[in-house]
Every structure is written in C-alpha cells, then in structure tokens.
Image (cartoon, rainbow, N blue to C red):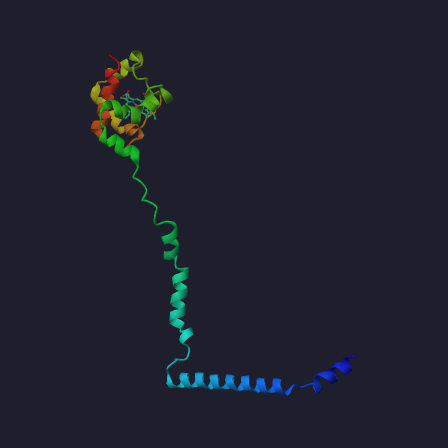
Length: 174
Ligand code: HEC
C-alpha cells in the first residue's frame, strides 16, 4: 500500500505546478534582492525597527511609575489638614475650649478629675487661687486624685484658651 503511494506521488510530478513554483521562487528572489539593494543604498536603514534606544524608551514609558500614578492617584485631592485643631483655634471662647479639650474628663469626673459644677469638690482648689489653677491647667499637674495633663492634653491650645476654659469652669460653680 505505502509503496504504491510513493510510486504514484513521484510519478505524478506536475510540470505546470513545477513551473509555478519556480516562478514564485524567482519573484521572491527578486524582491529579496531589491530589499537588499535598498538596505545597501540606505533608503531603508538596517535595524530601523530594532533601534535599541527607541525600544528601551518605549518600554520605559510603558512600565513607568508615572503612568501608573497618573491613572491611579492623580485625581485624589491632598488630605485635608487636621480639622479639630483649626476648630479650637478659631473658636477660642472658654465654652468651646472646655467642650473640646476639658469636658471629656471634667464633665463626668473621669479619672479623678473634679466635676465641673461640683462646688464641694472644687472648694479646696479654688482656695489655692486662680493663678495656681491656671498654672496647673496650662502646665499639667499631678494631684492626689490623678493626673491633670498639660492643657488637657491638647498642646495646640494657647495659654489664653486654657485660661478661658478655667474661667468657664469656675463660673459654673457660681
Ligand atoms: C485626661 C483628663 C483631663 C482632661 C482632658 C482635663 N483635665 Fe483638668 N484635671 C484632671 C484631673 C484628674 C484633675 C485632678 C488632679 C488631682 O487633683 O489629683 C484635674 C484638675 C484640674 C484643675 C484643678 C487644678 C488644681 O490645682 O486643683 C483645673 C483648673 C483643670 N483640671 C482644668 C482643666 C482644663 C482647663 C482642661 C481643658 C483645657 C482640663 N482640665 C482637661 C483631668 C483632666
């Protein structure tokens, strides 16, 4: 079977097909020679498509972090500055400073803090004099009951803000 096939194929060499093959081959050869000639006279510089520097630049552009940043994070706005500080600075009345920086401890009497409005609790403190109270509120103070942090822990407050808050607390005793 297979021997018969072999014989048939070899015997059937088609002269027309051969001629076409030779013709196509000749055309390919001519085109090849023309291209070579073009390279030789410089109309098509060798390696035009493989320019190393250009290729590297293109790759860099594609993998550049700039491109990633441009698509992912550029539209995001800069983070807003810490808002609570600004609020305290603008509204520096004793009332608002107290609410922002002091009420956490002094309204409920947390951690040994004397409750605002508690006359008995404040009487010995008031007896020290206002200046001592200012000093303890601004600079911080360790007493028998606990720790009063400097400026209630809010160091962005001005001394005047803290004094206003102390005045507010003393006014609540009347
Ligand atoms: C973290 C809790 C806390 C915060 C916040 C806080 N205090 Fe106090 N404060 C205390 C404690 C505790 C004491 C009592 C300490 C003691 O006598 O042992 C105290 C005591 C005081 C006294 C009495 C000082 C004295 O000499 O007896 C004043 C005045 C005072 N605080 C003002 C303020 C003001 C004004 C603010 C806000 C700016 C503030 N505190 C915020 C905990 C706090």
